[in-house]
Image (cartoon, rainbow, N blue to C red; front, top):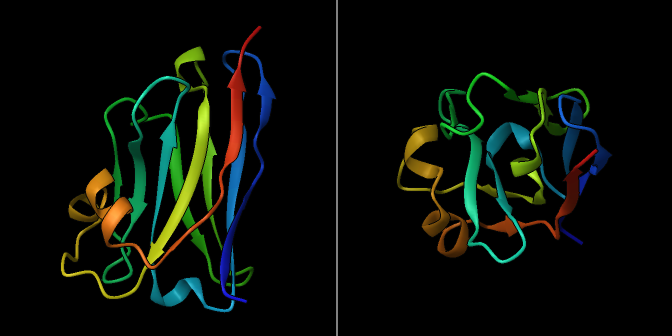
Length: 133
């Protein structure tokens, strides 16, 4: 069964770090563009970070730029989201999604909620991150 599974969420204090994993089964991360999106309670889903399969370009939304890092680990067939200097406003359920045939090729162009909802081939069920003291 082809699926995406996120892991690594949890409770962390402000200023702490977490590393989220997005591990597909049934396909290789080598050939897919991967995006991380999040949805906080009572708020709309928003993009966080994406990595393109065309040129490995990356994109970060302004709210996480300089604190989060997305990376593709081909040996482990996993895409990671390293999250440092976490803030209470980072509290959300984080979802990863994958696509192989997007018409847009840059990480920035693919990193939109519209692409997540209508153009991604696979979406995970999410992992909860709570940043609180």
